Image 1 (spheres, rainbow, N blue to C red):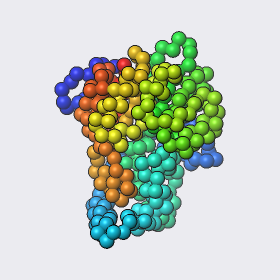
Image 2 (image 1 turned 135 degrees about the horizontal axis):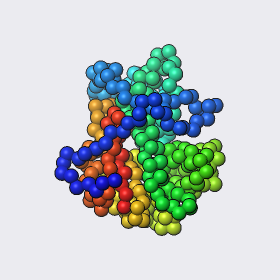
Image 3 (image 1 turned 60 degrees about the vertical axis):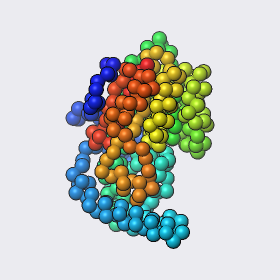
Image 4 (image 1 turned 30 degrees about the horizontal axis):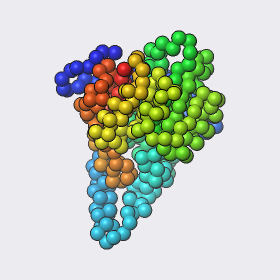
Length: 325
C-alpha cells in the first residue's frame, strides 16, 4: 500500500475479478434464491431508459410540490410505475436509508417474474444503483479478506468492529467463511437501531458464528469508547458516510484513526454522483450525500491517514476507502 500525496485528479482503482473466477459465498438455499456472484457491469439498457426515469422524477417532484402547496402530507404512492405496481419497490421506498432496504437489494432473487408487477420490480433491481450496491457488497468482502490476510495476529483471533452495521450480513458471511477454514474472526457489531442488531444476532446464529460476535447498541460516533477494550484489527463502516456532511465525516474518521493501533485497517464507502441520484431522492425518498474521489481523498488526508487506497466497483457508483494506520 503506497502513501498518497498525489495532486488532483485523485488516482483510483477499479475492482475486477478475472473471468471465470467466482466468489465463495454462503447462502441458505431454502431462504435465498441463487444470486449472481460476479461483478455486474451492464449499463446500456438503463442509460436508454433514462428519459423515462427523468419523466417519472419530474412528475413526482411536481406531485410533491402540489401536495405541499395544499398542506397535504407527502403522497403515499409516488408513482404507479414504481411503488404503485412494484410491490418490492414499495418496500424499498418504505425502508429507504435503512438496513432493511439493503437486505432486499442484496438478496434479490434474479429469476424473473413475468407479470407487470414483477417486471417493474425487475427493472429497478437491474437499474444501475442496485447492481452497484451488490457490487459494493462483493468488493467489501474482497477487501476484508485482503486486510485479514495482512494482519499479524501471532496465532490469535482477528477482531473486527462493524460500525453502523445494520444486519451485519457482510462481516458475518466473512466470519463464517474463515470459520470453515479453521480461522477465528471475532466481531463487535455497533448500531443505534436495536432491531438491526437483533437481525445481526439471528443471522450470526444461522451461520453458526453467534459465539464469535458481540452486539453494541450505540452510535458510531462513540467509536473511541467502543474500541477501548475490544482493540480491533479492522474497523468496517459501510454506508454511513452517505448520510454525513464533509466535516462530520472528517471528524468521525479522525476518531476512528485514533481508535486503532498501528498497522490496523479502516474500510468505509461512499456513493458517488450518478445519473440516477435524482430518481433515488424524489421517487424512492432516499436522499444521500454524494462524493467524488477527491472528496474521499480529502476525508482521508484531513483525518490523518497517509497510507490508503480508493477503489470503485465496476459501475463507478460506490467507492471504498481502505486506510491503514
